[in-house]
Amino acid sequence: MEPDGAALKPRETYHIEVLASEDEADARGEDFVRQRVSVRTGTVEAAKERALTLFARARAPQRSGAPAEAVRVIDGAGTEVFRWSRFDEPA
Image (cartoon, rainbow, N blue to C red):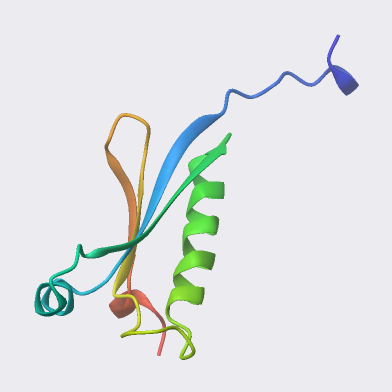
């Protein structure tokens, strides 16, 4: 029996990618994906929250190189389910 009678929610793996601008990556000869993180969570909303946290850290001034351009969340099937760029941030 589960605690408090609650059913366990199935968890899915989401892949979060922090992206540099393609121009910057080309100029440096690097992949435009700066960071990849895989998370297992029961909802896409939790993966989005984690992605936005990673994006905020990647945009911090103390990071080496230029700030991150965007972040995206890809589900286990390889479909992009969320994308946020620096242009989506409030002024």
